[in-house]
Length: 176
Length: 167
Image (tube, rainbow over all chains, first blue to last red; front, top):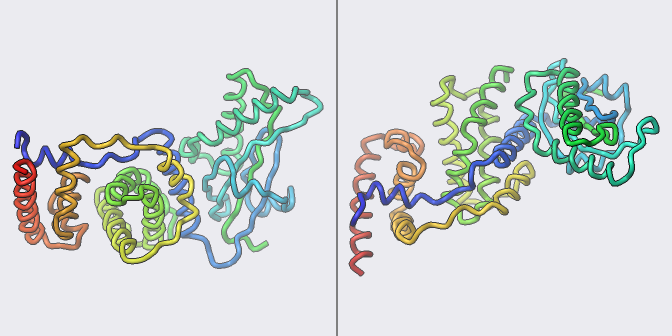
């Protein structure tokens, strides 16, 4: 044998999925989802939807329900992005985000531009690394995410006012 | 479960998840199953978070012991797909690793033909990069048993490769 057995064994290691930023994002999704699944109490989780203008509401369960009520949210099952956050009152919240078109009379946008902006916002959310803002809590996190999305869209020459970001918080332990 | 426990296990997952995924990928014919087993490993770890060691290196070993048990259970029983691993499963389905070269393929075949107890030891040491002592811990063996089993495995591999090159 021309090589040592150790070398041969090392070279026989099966290739695995290349380590890319995309893989890291998908792994982060599994980490977050496992936390939510493993720590969910037996009682029904409360889903609370928030829709805001080009911003994302990550609020305590009570505040969110009081502000917007419960909304029909089929997109929650296939959002652009998910993460978890601990609410100010200590509850663990599963957060989901999707980009939606916004028709703001104060900022008219043609449909082609709106579609392009929604696609860009969706891609931004899908690729967003929430670990970069995990130090922000509650509304501070919302503000930082909104700032980054607006900056990203503006950098591409797209109008941030053409999209809204729908956010849903599903929090453990809500007694509402 | 304390906030500190949560922070520690999240950090352990972030550091170890890529290696855990690779561990499963190297052992499963269906690479997409690796996503499910990774998810299952994380669920189990969360439920035992009170046992999570404080030291990061011990945390890694702790997670690999859970992963090894998860894999063992998977081989005995049919497992449900986990919704939480859906996206990762899709990613693995669309991302093909590089194929093995001819010689590597022959060596891998020889590894896969080893007896079960020897094969996993060789894989842990040469494919996953663990020491003999660490591999022994993951497999629940004492170190001296692992050493003798490893020596026997290498003898068997040498014989198999010599026979393959002669044939």
